[in-house]
Image 1 (cartoon, one colour):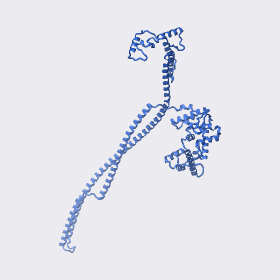
Image 2: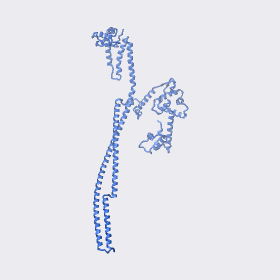
Image 3: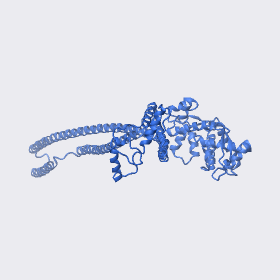
Image 4: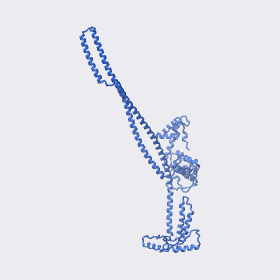
Length: 574
């Protein structure tokens, strides 16, 4: 027989409770030994446990249940449970983040009432409840494990937004520069075209002037020919007259002279004919001086035309290249814009790091100092160091790690060790002292064994293990400190001692070079001496790396080589 359990504070009289239990006991096995199907039979839908819907038994029972009267009311126990559930749901505060968790609690309590009241089905119902609880706990852990991915997506979104903004700014700058260059080239093309037109007009004018000069010289030649012929005729007539008037002047025979004159005239006529023939053949020939001058002018103009044509072709090629580059830029811009839209759709907002100002010790001023020049990943490391430092301060003892082979030799201890709680500065000074002693020792033993022996000599055998655990926890936490991170890497075997020794030797060599450059021992050197010392110490570094080292030392682009630098300040450790 199943026991009926009412929720606490139900407020029913004892007689009603007994009546409810009698009614429940009389109806719970009313049909063939199975639980009462109320309220399913009232709506015509029947649920048969462990029965196939198409079986004969199913149809038979469904028919018998459908013949039940439809006026059956709900059991009082069910009404009480529904009222209790409704009242609990109304009392919940659904405005919080855990509203869904709180909403499950009333249903969980109602289910527990059923499990307690139905003794026969209690194991099955309990296993069902436990299965659901395990699944809910698994889903909670899964959601909690996905929280870091949300922060990582926020960081990726910030980086991508910054990169896209930088790309868009660079793209706008390049487009503006290309537009300016295009305008300049168009202006140059217009100027060259104007020069070409002016040269063509000048050539046309010169050709016209040449034609006019040619006609002028031709007319003048004809006039000279006529004048020469007239002069020759007058001379011949004068000679004939003079010979006729004084035949005895020459003292020779007039017949002979007449014959000589005749022959001379014939020669003159032949010569005149040859001269006329030559003038007729070469009358159109330009004088060599004018020809050479015109040829030189024409050659210069042709060279200018060829140069302008080459410039024009080059400008056309550059214009085509600029058009191709412009099309490529447009495609890249569209691609980057699509990537930006996709990133904005899938990414999460950037975290507000100013919220850390009220949490970190020292207030906003110290947080500004810690966050200066760091990205989101580095800020997370800084925040973890601050949180870890607070937790480390709260610990009074450290548990021993045992004597396993994987445990470093200086941490092999079984028990509780005291947390000495030194400051960060004390730990750094202690590590520097250990390095000094290690360099003097000449590396006779392994570094972890040397470190533990150093602690025994410094603090005694009783406190050496406590100091070893304290220092180990501090250098494991403060990875941003160079001294601590190097020491941690050496203790864990991730780095060789030669790296630190080589670094120290390089620093000493650089200081020596700068001291040699300081001829007056004033602690000051010029920027030129600084560059020479860096190139001598780092002979394999490129010029860009030397420039970066000089900028880190205080050199700027507007500094001159005569500016002085206090090089001792570069070797002061914080």
